[in-house]
Amino acid sequence: MELQELRKNCLIIYEQLNSIRNNIKYDEIENEIKIFNKESQKKDFWNDPQKAQNILKKINIKKKLKEDFDSLYLNITSEQDIIELLIEEFDEATFKDLEKEFTELEKEFQIFKIKTTFTEENDNKNAIMTIKPGAGGTEAQDWALMLLRMYTRWAEKHGAKIDTLEFMSGDEAGIKVATIQISTNYAYGYLKGEIGIHRLVRISPFDSNARRHTSFASVYVIPEVDNDIKLDINEKDIRIDTFHSSGPGGQSVNTTDSAVRITHLPTGIFATCQVERSQLKNKEKAMKLLMSRLYEHYKEIQEAEKANKAVEKKDISWGHQIRSYVFQPYTMVKDLRTGVETGNIQGVMDGNIDPFIEGFLLYEKK
Image (tube, rainbow, N blue to C red; front, side, top):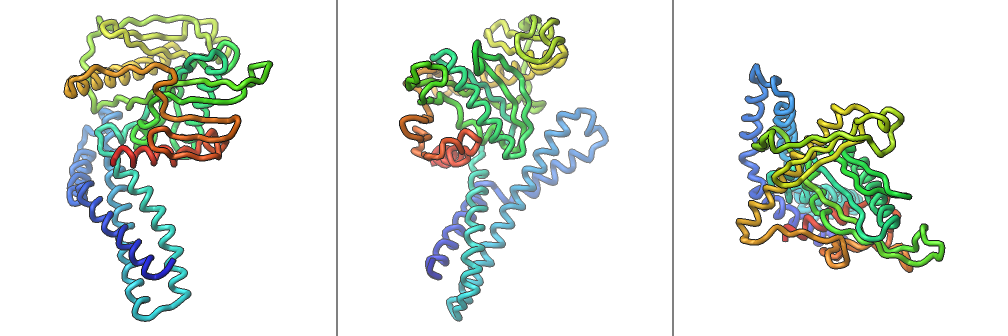
């Protein structure tokens, strides 16, 4: 990279930072932090632990946003100052060091830029993800399990907490359904772009003739409902059923009515949990899942009414894919919306999906 090219690239980031400053309403962040801090100092602050934790989370998110911006702004202006000195009196060693620093700065800026795309009210919430197999029997059920592992590995790489809310094993292999909660800052913001149909092409290990199969699985993501969101649900509209767990978990799970299904009668929406030994814990998790599903259901209806259109329901089939994963006859993962692709399919299945997530967030912003 030449000095003038480095100067130009620094100017591009500097101008983008100034644009981002306006978009994130930087001048209002300090006042927002003060308001949240004042709230946290009230005597009854911890009377509602969930609400208290939500406020502390908001404080930390705002602080981190401001700190990251300040750090980037300081570093880019510092680089610009050094470049102007090098234009007057060039020094090769200083230029090389500056070039390396800019490479790291550019990476930090790209990460920060992604975070500034989170402008929806629920982007900073935890994510609840449900994965279901489509047509294809055991092959599709195995594919659903592979996706579950992929997202679990992604969450682990990002230091997120993973909580299983629902899990039903497949007939021979894989899963019939799984729901997990991924808890970390902006979990829903990052993962909302994963909603859709994921297509697998490979030689099936379950086919004795070693033929190539195409399978589908759906991924659906909703934000976790917390105390900031109030749902007016009549207790008479809720039905709670208990039954024997059919999943793994030991003798206690499989021989008592520990599994719980909670149904909201007016909508038919339900949530099931059988991952815990305790019926009470299963009930708590199922209720949390049901509230999140109901919130998203009513939100979709409101948005559809505003747009004067019906809520779209997609089939798990050829016509509604967002991404293809091809193992044979070649290796390729391609996002059909953004065009982002890679031949490193094993890396993707091991949770390295950030290029796809970031690609969608930037594509959606455009």
